[in-house]
Structures are given as C-alpha cells and as structure tokens.
Length: 417
Image 1 (cartoon, rainbow, N blue to C red):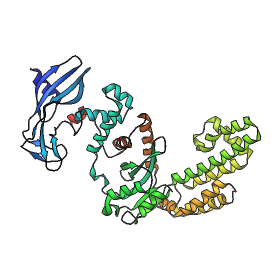
Image 2: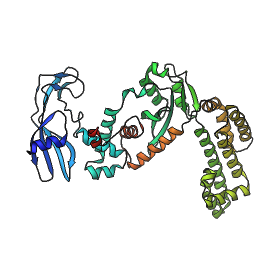
Image 3: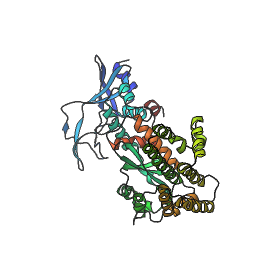
C-alpha cells in the first residue's frame, strides 16, 4: 500500500485526500487537498464557486501525534470574498476558524483539561499552557448548545472565586438538570442583568423560582422590569447556616484577641487551635477536636453560647421539618440572638428577619443551592488544578466544559460513534 493511501485511512479527515507524505527528523508532514470545489466562509454558511486568489504560502495544522513524532497537516488554501466578512481564507472541515490545530487535537486537549492540570497537558501534547486556554475557549464556543437557556423554571444564581484578588464568576444553574447553563465574570447586579438580557423577556417570564444568597445585587436584577419579577426569590438555607458560622467565628476572634491582651500567650494559642472544633459539624470532628469542644462547653462563657446558637440555627433546617416548624424556630432563634448581647448574632437576627420570606420560600419549594455549591466546589478544584488562569473566559469555558451541558469524548470515541 502506498504511503498516501495508508495515511488517508489513518487520519480520518473529512473532505480531503492525501497528496504526499514527508518524513522529517522530528515530525511527519501530510500534504492534503480539499475535495470540494466550492469555497466556504469559515465564519458563516456562505459558499461560492469563485475564488479571490490562492494563498502564496501553505497552511499547517497540528494533528494527533503519531507515536513520538508530531503529525502536521499541510494544505494550500484559496481565498474568497464573503459579502458579510470580506476577503477570508476558505474554511476547512477538519479545523476551526483561526485555529492551528485540527478538531481531533482540540477535542483531546479539552477532554484532558477537564481531568488533569495544564502542566500535564503541556508535557503530554507539547503545547504552551496559554494555548490550552485558547483551545478550551474555542471548543466551548463551538460545542455549547444555544438551546441550553430554554425551559428554565427553577434556577440558582451564585458567585465563585476563580482567582485571587476578588476575581469572581457568576454562575447560573438549572436546578432540574443540575448543570451550569450560563456564566460571566463579575458578581453584581450588572452581571445578572447580562444573563437576563441574553435570556430575553419571554424566557425570563417562564422562571418560577430563583435561589440565591442574601446579597442585594442578584435580587435587584431579578426584580427589574423585563427580567423575572414574577419569580419567587428563595434564600438558600446553606447561606443562612453559613452566616451563623461566620458570626460564631467573629465571636471566637474577639475572645482570642481578648486573651492576647491579657498576656497569656499559651491560652491564646490553645484557643486559636480550637477554631475547627467550633466550626465543623459535630459528627465530623476528630477525637482531639471533640475533646477541645467538650472543654469549651464546660468552661462556658461567650464562645460556648455562640456555639449553641450556631448549632441551633443549623438544626432549624434539618430534613423533615415543615414550613410552620421552620417559621416558629426562626422566631425563637431571632429572639435568642437579639438578647444574646453578642453583636455578630444581633446583626444576624436582623438579617434573618429582613430575608425571612425568602428563607421560608426555599423551604416551601424545596429549593436549595446545595447542588450549586457542590458545583462551585468542583469549580474551585478545577481552577486550583489548572494552576491559575489569566483569562476569565478560559476559566469560564473550562467550567462549562466540566459542569455544563457539554459531553466531551476523546477523539477515538468520537470516530467510533
């Protein structure tokens, strides 16, 4: 069998035939020609039989490696005049617009990016780590289903940090599908406005409930005219319990600073190590942390009372309680917290009273951001594993590839199916 016929069968590239194969010291170059006569604009569906001219140089694309050798595809392309985009080089069926890699190569990189870190990908496929981010963006833009925003009835809006320096992404989750369906950089009302503008008035009018935290930005955007004023705002119990833990931690820090001013550095150090014994769930404590917590309860005082309030707030949202039960327990908790003479818990009681309707709505509808928070933890793992992104678009693309409505497969599985 001739080399050209062999590589034509091996490459599985659509719409081309192999003209020549050149073996170099570190790579194999396969020269191909397009079978079609018509020229197609790479940015739209326009096609024409008329060419503007032929490029004076060859175009090259990196393909899947052939053993230890790099495999490159080379072709001499024509240019066309698109009525919308002007003079452009014709598109090829095996590569995306403005990409130096074939679709198979980019699918492999994107699939690896959802499962390992960029450094590993860089060494395995021999590309620069910035190139990984650009490939991820192209694959996400190409594979993302524009219909993913249809039939949204119950959604969750939350933010997640993707980089140090207060850099956040706003993610919208479909509760029914359990997937991230939209995202953008930022975490304020303007960012949520972008989502509702893209969603449109008709689809926004179908939203029945939105779960979110107690920040004013997302609620303000949802209540705006033309967005989703008809939707029920549900305040997730996770964020309520989180505020209780933060209030406890604030009380703990105040007491720790008080011990330091007394001059007993050893006592202050021992108390500082008690942080996780106070903040973790009792069933998740280690033996040492359990002993520490028992000692703190026996000693009594402000910290012990704060811990009991934190646990009382968490118990309010235990499974099996009705809306009326939660309503009564919230009333009792706010009363106790207001009389506690601990500023963080007095402030927490005011916050709960202000968002009481949203908290009860979440219990009544059975809505929780637990799935969204689980996805957020997965997002944090992704960004840490990637050793930091310099582009929010690349980080968001990887989030959508991993947690969104995109099913990635390695190239050999794609060709098998």
